[in-house]
Amino acid sequence: MGWPPFIRELDATLSVHSQYVLSGNLYDSHLFPNGDGMALLPLRDMLWEALNASGISCLLIYDPVDGLRVFPEGDEEAEAAAKKLLGKFDAKPSLEGLTRHLAAIARPAEQVRAAFLIEGASRISASGSDLEPAEREFFRFCEKLARTARPVRAPGIRPKPFYNPILWLVERPGDLPSWMSTENDSVRELFVPRPHLGDRQTTARLLARAFAVDPDTDQAASDACDAFAAQADGLTLQSMIEVTRLAKERNVDLADLPDAVRTYKLGVLDNPWSRGHLRKRVLDGEKRVPERVLGQPQAVTKTLDILKRAVLGLSGAQATKAGSRPRGVLFFAGPTGTGKTELAKAITSLVFGDDSAYLRFDMSEYSAEQQGERLIGSPPGYRDSEAGGQLTGAVREDPFRVILFDEIEKAHPSILDKFLQILEDGRLTDGRGHTAHFSESILIFTSNLGSSKVIPGLGYAEIEHRIKASVTDHFYSVLNRPELLNRLGDNVIVFNFIGQEAASKIFDLQLENICKRVTDEHRLTLTIKSEVMGTLREWCTAELDKGGRGIGMALEAHFVNPLARALFDRELKPGAELTVSGITREGSIVELDLS
Image 1: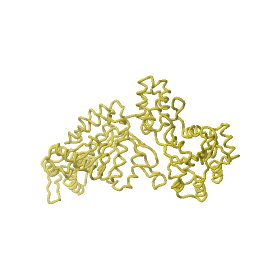
Image 2 (image 1 turned 60 degrees about the vertical axis):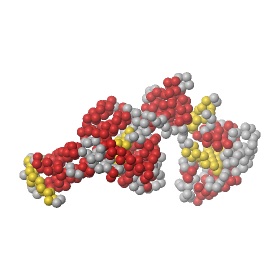
Image 3 (image 1 turned 120 degrees about the horizontal axis):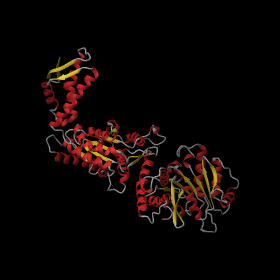
Image 4 (image 1 turned 45 degrees about the vertical axis):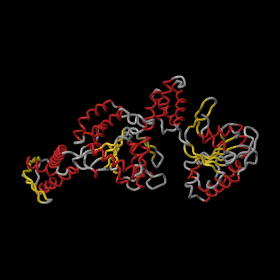
């Protein structure tokens, strides 16, 4: 492994470009060849090593905060070269003074090789397109300087002439005026990429020295380094250094670095997934969940299987980067009112002990493309950018969550693209550049796709086939997002229509809730005679295609409304006992006999 590609590109083009605009992974540590091995250096140091190897004597560094200085500090040869080019210079130059120093480097009076590095160039002006007069003059000068720079010929390593380069470090290329580099062949843009797996593996082996092991001779250490590198997907090399420091402070062994990576990413030490009682709670859930989500044995069984996989950390175990993906992903599809949201709440209760711990997004509110900013937040400078993203902010605050995306098919297709990164990489960057990690979350999507193509009475296998076909057709033909469906895999869980037995149980539970509410609110006892109960049951469970929600709506119309009317007309005394002894219906009006 040699110099990074962007360094090789810089070095190879010094004879044709006088200025470079560098963006991307600027604040990371970078690998560079050091003798027979590799070492880690900040970008500034690595640029110096590469430029010095090509015969450049000194590096002048300027930033809007610290001003101008010579690098390497204390290097007599570098200071002599700077003095020869600049004479006595102002350590805190104005923009006008800075233009003189840049001209002295790019059009040197002496054949001295030097480079000028402008750090924090994005901070020179408030906007690349809205410049103050002095800023505009400065950048106009720099544009002309790029075209009028003179190559330097000097004896030594590279005797052929090349330019003394001016290097701009910017957060985004657009931070500089676009006309500086547009159709200006003297200015070259270079992107500094984030580290790939090979970089992370090399770095892991360098950092293993902190644990007094040699991965080249110790197979266990080598495997631990590879696991560390894989788990560090999405991290910079500098972050890997910080993770190693964190591990040493916590007396974590090399083999346990993935746990330190999790702590570093999420910012929390406690891991609910590692709690011993969680496995028992999930086992207990095999009895409790079917009692709560009625009439859906197939959906409940498959959901609990995926939850067990999540608890054991085996979700996506077949993938190279499984460790960074969400703990669990479920796609609930089927007719409305069949228990999809209730099952999501049941899962939340199992894992976190509280139904309300889940985070819900109604995706019908994200039908327009621009509404996606509500999930991840607006970029800096835009309206409401300080508020942050509702999704990314919540996950950064608490990464251990069940997140429900209700009616996902109603979201704008471009918003769905954001889920690709979450499902594949387990992370999402918000508008302010902060990363939210979803590796400890369970994601649940719900959908009513295909509901119009099924009717009560069909067998579950046929309902499952038709709904899955509709889901596939929607992602392939309507959204043109087959890759999103591929990320969901076999986690599409189809809900059946509720049967008569389940409907009767749902009716009993909901009616019991109504009676309990009356008791809690008014401190009286409400009794319903069996013949009234039978009539209500028949009325409320007549249309099973509307599911449990339909039963609730029917109870509200046929019982709660006439009950409220009857109670409103009398004086309610605490401790009173009331009986519903009769019920009649004429059109849509229901009357209760209350005694």
